[in-house]
Amino acid sequence: MPDSVAARFKGKTVLITGGMGFIGASLAVRLAQAGADVLVVDNMLEPYGANLFNIEPVKAMVTVNFCDIRDQNAMDYLVTGREYVFHCAAQVCHLMSLDNPFIDIDINIKGAAVLMEALKKRNRDAVVVKMGSRGQYGSVQKLPAGEDVLPDPKGIYEISLLSAEQIMRSYYKIHGIKSVMLRLTNIYGPRGQMKHNRFGVANWFMRLALDGIKIPIYGDGSIQRDFLYIDDCVEAILLAALNPEMAGEVYNVGRDDPSSFLELAQVIVEKLGKGGWELTPFSNERKAQEPGHFYSDISKIKKACGWVPSTSLQDGVAASLDYYKANKDKYW
Image 1 (cartoon, rainbow, N blue to C red):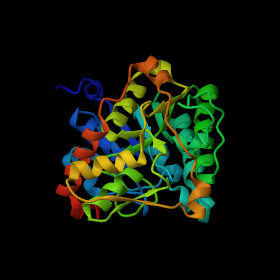
Image 2 (spheres, one colour):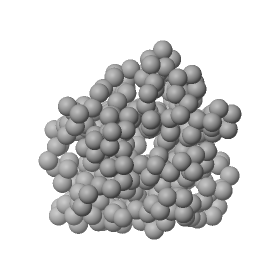
Image 3 (tube, rainbow, N blue to C red):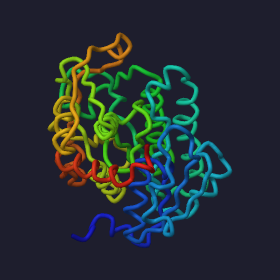
Image 4 (cartoon, one colour):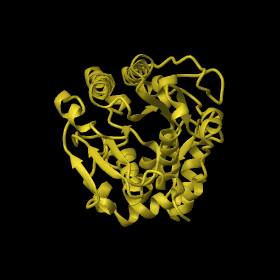
């Protein structure tokens, strides 16, 4: 089936910050294969998942610049002439932010400000799509969580992403730079980092199963999340860029039909055909950080651009396992 959404970017100039990471590289591959002129920016900072192999299918079709989004001179140059900017670069580990909050402030807040200043000076006509996190909501009292929920983030990581979101909204309101802010849920699938468990729980569960280790399920396994396959996530990002009337707004990108952690583990074991899972009690630290059930109200983005996820948990897990079995040496 032709990729009708990505095809609309054929011949368009695109900048992807954090373009060697999970989401950024998935965007780069899809856009380059559709004929877009793709420029990837990444500083390859450990341990956020930047991986040269992530763009292997299109490495001869994209331009890569190994620089930092906090470099004002570099960003002034790199945004010039780019019709679309996908801002994926961020410090994305909640646990790391507990040890050193200044990294979050520097990368997530300063990085966003540097990017938007560069666009203000050099390219106000660009369309910007920012990747945020459902963690910006914190604990919620009503599910599914809609964009009208008052954010109550617990940690500096989530606060920094919320701040970056507000910075971009400010540049839209004051300077007219068309920015769409997305709050992504639990994304999983090919090209995600598999070296540690500090983020990307679904992918980490798959690594454990592939390594023959029982998947640990905290509590009774009933806590729910809306696990979203990467291809569906990329589709939402592209549609957000293509619909200018979405500028200045925040949109959830997730699922309104959640699965429990126990269900996730069971699907992984079923699709792999081996392995198992075990219930384990919460540690005090993990219990304090656990926000409880979460799944997204996606009616706003559906109304705005028609996006709904189409990949079932079963199909997404099966495709992910196949990818990592074939490319284990590139991710372990």
